[in-house]
Length: 230
Image (cartoon, rainbow, N blue to C red):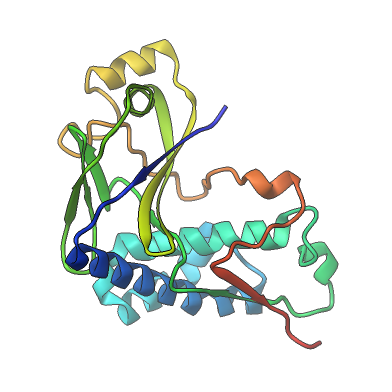
């Protein structure tokens, strides 16, 4: 069973502005990629990477290669939500012969991180921003701390609720006792100086599970689905 941890951040005004700028830049990349999804009906992560990565890197050099990859992940994930949720009015099977709607990401959209753009050690998180790394001390409870050592970390997301920021960590089921022991001993896949936690980088074709996939579509507040006249 999956397990999530949400931790509020307490940025200074200068740090808050940097997080807002990162979120806005991330949304710009997502919105640059969304028309490709609409026109090609492709939202597979690997396929999108091959089609768009080079052009996105050239257009958004300040975001860096890995954050561009994470934006591709975000659009691929959102495509699955909108076009593959069984109860979605925009399910791809229902859109046969009709143009797909255009996905528009607001500046408040989530920002996805990975082991290259966020690390965690001794309760301190170091995260990528447009102006260099930013560090926060996280107050982790015992159960939260244990999750980093016993479960596989599937997603790391920066989210904004109003003007407040938080980091959300989504974990998979507990690892086997052997894997958990290795992680606790610092023998996890992540390099010891990269993160004390088991921060993983998903395989190119891998996406974290979507809770909404078996229910009716719930469009996130940061997303607009613009239908196009046939």
